[in-house]
Length: 181
Image (cartoon, rainbow, N blue to C red):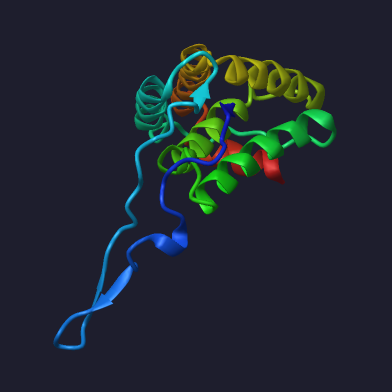
């Protein structure tokens, strides 16, 4: 969890330079928003801001290559905690809070790491238990442990996909057609 997402000395959205500015020729030039310095009261678990930025950025660089393997957000208290976490991260971005530059990337990392399906035939209760355990790891700042778990799950998914592709019956169209009739 990004703790202490309080106000910082950054300029608010109304104090920033405009995102679009006309040129003397009438063209509009778009610029990216600038981010103020990070508030060092903001931490993920026991990590300070520079460490948190490094951890979230390295996790993001890895998870963008993961295959889709997410379970739906469960209903109930655990699902509400997850939604509250993601909402807080988006709110931090939307209100130009202390973690504005980190919050969107952290929300993408959190979604991918926390909602990984443990295995193909996992039941709803397993999803709830996994999400509850993973939320505690995120809150404590154990993102590296979450990444290791996600790597193991992704390896299983890749291996299962590769094994399905090596099925000796695959491509036997006559047998498959006969079984459908």
